[in-house]
Image 1 (cartoon, rainbow, N blue to C red):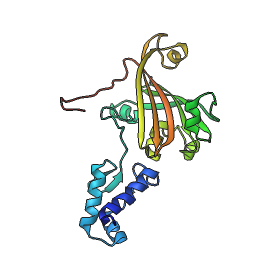
Image 2: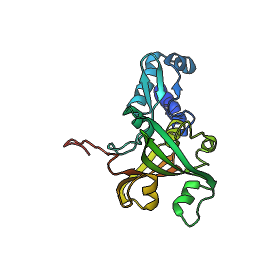
Image 3: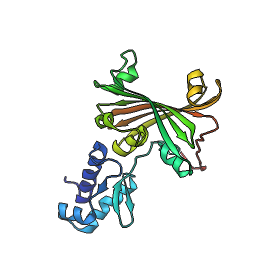
Image 4: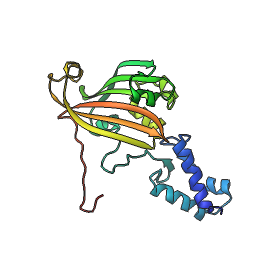
Length: 236
């Protein structure tokens, strides 16, 4: 049995988004363009677009059109933050200092690195996010060049790695792990802290349609970052 046309339109658009063909921020064709492409009425296109909005795959902007949304983590209490955007929103000057950058093979003693590389190479990055001239977060990141080959040529003086990935790679699954540690000598030096100072640690992995994209560890001074969740009695 053939699916209704509005479901096929939705499936076509969703496929382009989930495959990465249409990355976050990509403008979806206007409804008139889709009507011409599929030879259908505005109501049919409207049903497809409404379903995509409800699924969180696209956002509508008044007078501008519809755009591919930034996906959210499965857990309703935590998204993937854009550190640059958060710092700028607070009215502080933002900078990213790239400390090291290298393309390398995975460590075959590490099952996680082998899974991430998926037969390709890894881009290894270390850097510090600054807010108002002070260290805000230390970031150590591995990116699968098989999943995101264009990142090898990215200019991180213009855009930090996490923001680049949010703009260019449509991820479909993410896992975050929150922990705490006392800064060792190296982390304390890079974050301008006393050795042993309390830090918040976020370890995150993302995938696109089952393909591992990146693994990152971000270390924040304990007083610099909060994770906030609000729950109601009916929350699951």
